[in-house]
Image 1: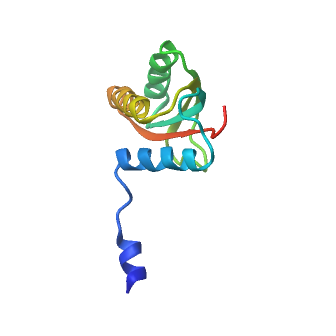
Image 2: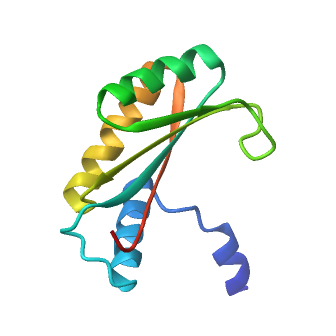
Length: 119
């Protein structure tokens, strides 16, 4: 019965997932005061919205890659943003808020981030 309860458990809310990721980075020896390589992932229904969002992200100092739909992203256009940044509780909240806003302004979805444990 406990297995079914675990399977029914909803995934963590985005803010909680961010905290879990930070704890995982720390458990891998990450010093969260040091800048590290960070990737952010966004998805859009069409090329026009993906490229428009990519321009906004590029202006914020990120290296941006726009990719057409494929087997991994499904029918969505993907935008990957990367940069070297400090990743901690404060910056992660700011990243998420900013990327969610950019995605929403361009009718897309922010799917989250990942970061290198070591700079």
